[in-house]
Image (tube, rainbow, N blue to C red; front, side, top):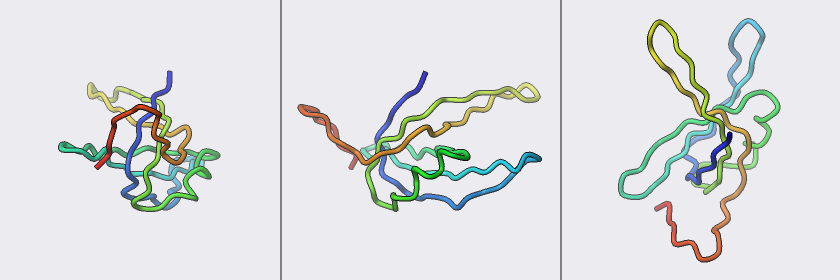
Length: 99
């Protein structure tokens, strides 16, 4: 199951290479804005990294993502795995703001 959220782009990271399989990822950091903003990092891997090239700091985007979880040594970890990112489009009749 995937989720979507609209955020203001804080940073689009450089391509990072890691692991024994030469895995590549690029991170999009976004902020939800509002009175209590949440800063979220979305990991875009391999072929999904190309979706980030057109966005820069300050752009408002909608990110589709999966929540990925794992356990290691008794601790739980989650990551937000980016699926797609597109320019924000306000839905008709919606009264939402990211400011």
